[in-house]
Length: 259
Image (cartoon, rainbow, N blue to C red; front, side, top):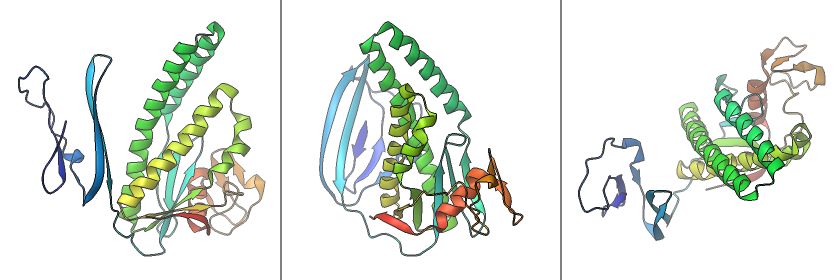
């Protein structure tokens, strides 16, 4: 349960509803969060599947964002869930997503089996469970991307415009399409609000040929990308997703989500 002090610092403490105090087994140092001048808030205390939950929301002012032109690019694909790259230093952060891939495959198989039985309630429960797992992963990924941007000294995070999903959906089975689309949008949402809290700026770029363009010379020949390897006639050779993240980081913005 969150305990708010007068300086708006939130601590997490454990408790029992029987009236007895219980010593918390883990102390969540990472859950400390200082909130400046909250404007309004509400809370809910509810029981679900044998567990008690306390949820709350707060509205507060965001300080002005950092200024600067240095940026990182974030590429989102199917081979690698996400790759964040900073071209100037050549640094990148990649999430291979093998574990998540296995989870998606398992849910896809379960979904197919339930569709045959036409059990609508079970399908809905399965969808909710899968979304909770994807939300957890997106929280982890977005948090690490923000940390990576700070380490690189970047003030801008560039993403592909999500309309690119329309050109990718033909590669997905219809039953999986909504989950993939939702996961991409959810990651963007979490990354955007975390960036605002970190005083960073999120910008959208045109996704046209980001996977084909060479981050070294700008060549966009389709043959340059063969699977997960990008090889250009100029001699540049690199993981294709890393190359794409560098390309995205240098693209001009077409839409800005500012703090």
